[in-house]
Length: 73
Image (cartoon, rainbow, N blue to C red; front, side, top):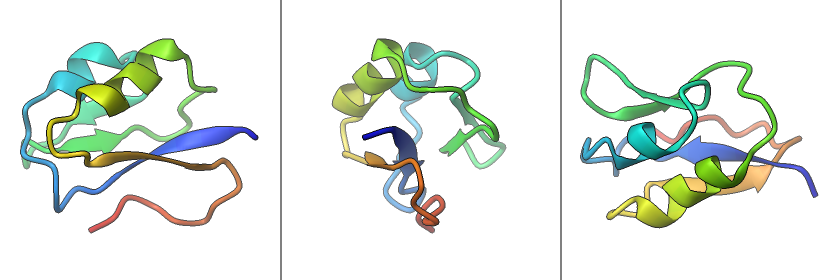
């Protein structure tokens, strides 16, 4: 199964651990100081998967690549 990241922006508290861990083409902090996925992110690597484990509030999830769900509000 090919997967992609999803971020629950309502749960995110802006620690920036994911942005520091995931490659810069996957996650960035927005002007609201919360994590946001960047468009057209490539296939997930280990660094992106590590960001899931590091999130202290479990705001980052894996979804099937063909899922139509976007970031959770």
